Length: 399
Image 1 (cartoon, one colour):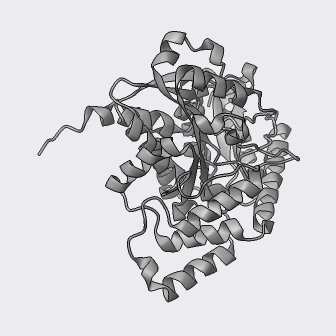
Image 2: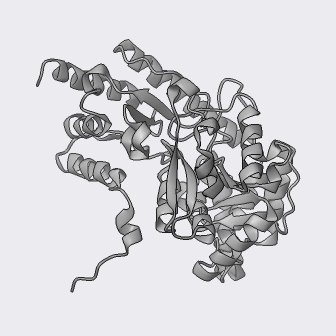
């Protein structure tokens, strides 16, 4: 039986992450000792008090086994609003300015499907988290790339967007701290410019703030919604995955303009039942608990960052220390610049067992870079660099 898949699905680019994952499996099959620095998948366990809350709820509160509310239970939304006020000094109405999500990835894709008609334009950062482009494509929309370049500190240049495109655009994606480039906003000027741009052209701003709490060296990440007028045009996504090492729990939230969120809630009510109630209550526990567990997580990532950057420096691969996220965004070694990021990542995992993500996986302008995720035990970074050094030596010798 042969049934053609939809044109929308066929429009999606090859999923490079699947290619790297296949090579990882082949490396395992060859008995290679795999060091997985590819996917941003936290290796640290969820804090025990959050796990304990889940276990108690599932065991002793059987009503939480029933269908949840699509928009999120009142207690969850209230906890989000309280946390947002405390963290960013932004007042959020829990009744209509908060929506629970089955992870922010789902929420981004569903917002695209809520608003985009075939041919509608979305302004998408490149390189960027793949769901931005893919959510637009699956909605039938057209992505207009906003290049994030090193010379501009990986910030979009709004002045380079033609007025003819801006007038047709419905959505703009932003993501700071940024995945994959690790870039940050050092002040609020970009956000202020974006608010003016959005109001001028009637564009919804989607700010993905999944890494807001993973910051180092005294840097404190802002919320887009702190900018005056931002609530008129924007929504902001947050995730429990990185902050609380809850990636597998699939829970997040989006806050912001009530009129933007209301249709998203409607869309979600047709396609999913929302986040399980027992997981929402675990999220409440996470948001309301003391922040020591977050500080411990940050310290672990900082230590790994420093260790890895130092080890890479010893072999002549100089990478700037990021002030946020759980990644390193590294320009390809000279030996692999001509071959490209995919060839480098393929060779690295096939020959040494070190898995990473090629920059091209994040878009055209990600080429020339590779992303390392800091998701393995500290002492493994020394081993990883020794293997990288071996690969680079063999490349120089033409092996």
